Length: 409
Ligand code: T4K
Image (cartoon, rainbow, N blue to C red; front, side):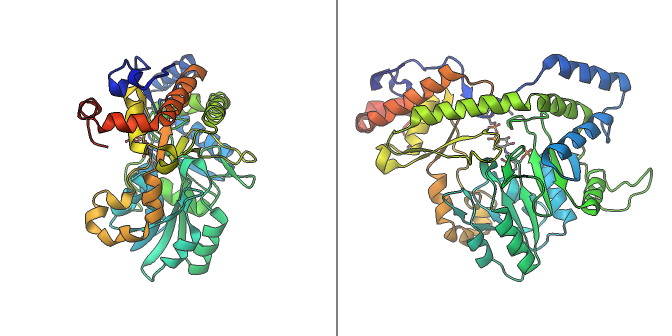
């Protein structure tokens, strides 16, 4: 454990970890089982197009999310695009700016303008009061995002959508196996979309699922993911290719068999981070409601520069130099990314909470690739950095240190 700041890699010391410790390292399930499934797929010679492995995954996801229907897709971005189109969203749609850019792109890709709404800094999610204030005659829907798997005010958004006759979808990319007031995420709004990207706690290499309790909507979304084909030679609707392959479904099913183990490890890592970071000034760990189901996939800090003595960006660079590849999820807000920053420059004016949060957050590594020793060392580095913040600032102010540091903080 490093004790002095001249031992920090930022100032020329050796990195704490020999290899990069990533955020979102894939959790690999039972390899033997995965290979068996892949063998079965090859033996069947049925590789995609609603094969039996995809159907099994869909049943498993519907069961887990306690919904009537699950439509597997090749990734959550396509899943969002399909749900948006199937639900008939047009014109303007209200979304948070504090999200992965896919939420906004899924709209803009289809010529729908995302109206960026600010968040509640306590939940990191859309602030329902602000959503209502943004409704105009051009707004046809709302997409809430359950950021970090924490529910995005589902009842409040459902009430707003009902009051104004708006469509309501949830980007549930982070929220598989999470609950809200005892109900599983998946059954809120018109439909919800999970991601099984490699970096998600359950993965199918790439993939996702749209879930809903609306059978007719599910039927249309399924058609859309397969070019609109309703039987051979019969195209009945505009569609795309959003299908999940059998190999991806095999990975998804195998990954789901380890779900309890992955959640247990995530939870253990999260609790250790909470214990070992407790009391460090200016460092706050985003909390989960322990009375609900959580997947604990994201370990997110908020750094208050005034209290900590150093800002999030200095801490980020300091950790990266140690091979702790912490990430600034989600920075910057979508409103300042392209094409949004140029196309809708004024949309950035009412998202002050988003900008402030995006400047404070730092995601730390967790998952099966991270154990107690790594968590301890990461917490030790954060504690050292903040205990010695004024010396670090002084060091960084020196021209030689700025050169080692890269000079862009
Ligand atoms: N909505 C929300 C709220 C989302 O967070 C996402 C995805 C979506 C929608 C869209 O879902 P998908 O269409 O992807 O199903 C990553 C993921 O690519 C993205 O899926 C995820 N959110 C987002 C939060 O994180 P990047 O651009 O930061 O990925 P990248 O390549 O930097 O990888 C992240 C980390 O994971 C790195 O530190 C390295 C590590 N990694 C990554 C891969 C792919 C591995 O160790 N192994 C791997 O195979 O977006």
